[in-house]
Amino acid sequence: LAKTTQPISMDSYEGQEVNITCSHNNIATNDYITWYQQFPSQGPRFIIQGYKTKVTNEVASLFIPADRKSSTLSLPRVSLSDTAVYYCLVDYNTNAGKSTFGDGTTLTVKP
Amino acid sequence: GAVVSQHPSWVICKSGTSVKIECRSLDFQATTMFWYRQFPKQSLMLMATSNEGSKATYEQGVEKDKFLINHASLTLSTLTVTSAHPEDSSFYICSARGGTSAEQYFGPGTRLTVT
Image 1: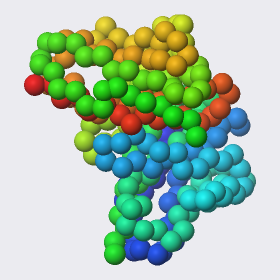
Image 2: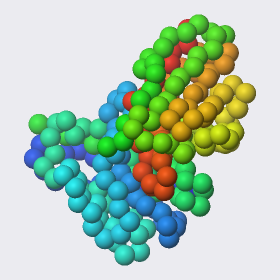
Image 3: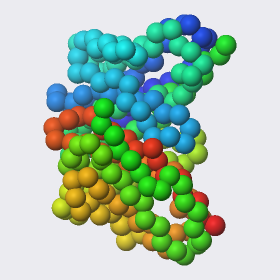
């Protein structure tokens, strides 16, 4: 399975916009890109999913360029409670729908 | 949104005993369920994929005789850790996918501690 690549960690301050980029060079035509947030000792929580261009919901935006080999999760005006690990997943339908988690990005929001 | 539950949320057992963890999709039918294991400060590692009514598919390096998975219905999958040892202590997380959805819905996880 092709892996996703994200920065290991990022620091930010309250009120700033945070952009986390994920590389997925081997993404297949039918695959979607999904981002999850995980707090310690909890299961991952769905943030946003997209296929191409831009997707926005009440908590985040997802930017996907035309070649789809990367994606950027944008969190507007982060708060201390956004401190968590963020994972991007590419759902490889060519592998019976299973996904491989990369290392994730640990975001630390400081006051 | 879709809800996935796990039971128990934490369990402590003695070495050599077996422990069963349940994963339920509460408001949708899960055609596929996944079991992950996560060690402290590490990412989730996929252990196996189970489809309702068929045998689970295990990832390389995961002992199928030690980690028994049963997906008997569209809303329930179980993971049984047999003859548990302290190195099996970990955070076990299940996820479920229904129909053609590309989204996985994750359970809250189960903390297993083997003494």
